Length: 179
Image (cartoon, rainbow, N blue to C red):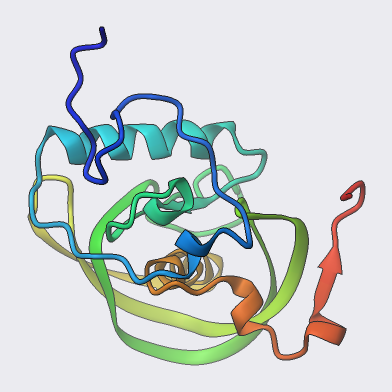
């Protein structure tokens, strides 16, 4: 017995949660806001961090990627030495409040492991969220960090990078070694 509480979606918190992959229908659902900033939320974030750290080159993860339909994401580009960023960001109930500029960039996703794609995103965003204690926070994100945050926030709306491709024919690429 682990002594841990039941997670926000009813699953046992602290257990190894598999990353769900496309076309799992849970990835297309809109997530509910977090209303309780409690031990179950901290357990969920702990589990997401474990998965993020295990993913090769992973820089972000969203709760729906493990089947938990709550508005929680982690963004962390600190392992990329040439990328400016805020370090590890745990964003609860995040919302983009402003954006500026547009750029095309290549994206991959833990939930779409066999493909990458070119997606248009804002170059700079401002977002508001809550931290793990429920305190309001705001961030100005630019460049790659802004792209990662937009990608993860899309998961909360039931969107994948596949939904943002300009052209599936010209902007979707199979990863080397993919089945």
